[in-house]
Amino acid sequence: MKKIYTILLLLLSTTLFSQEGENSEAPKTIPLNTIEKVPVYLGCEEESSNKELKKCMSYKLAAFVQKKFNTRIASYLKPSVEKVKITVLFKIDENGKIGNIIARGPHPKLEKEAIRVVESIPDMTKPGMQDGKPAVVPYMLPIKFVAKNKTMIFEN
Image: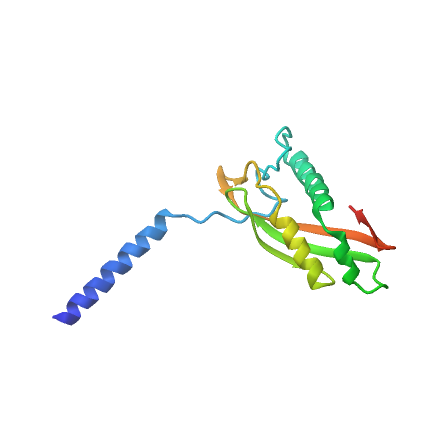
């Protein structure tokens, strides 16, 4: 009898948990170039088309990075390294918040600085939308600059 109760309890709990999953739908992950409505970056609210929103967001993110990135960290590079490229990947979630940040660059300290800067980017004023629902949008942000005579010149 004890075994029957255990089996019933197990079946009942499995059924309850499976019903929970049916109602809660995880947001879709949609690439930036195919999403119906691009996430809106602070200051880009006036733009109407996806093309204009992407251009505005790209410009504003580049300006933000140039302002916040501590270029003195490049002193850790070998003197022969002039062109620096750090690739930062992150996701803009269904609430417009940035997360899941990964950076790849020529030195761990540069990667850490890139992550620090991206973590400080303000939330989007609106998330990306697909089929009328908020979506997760992956984004790749290249950070490029030239290190000459201990001064940094950012490239777009």
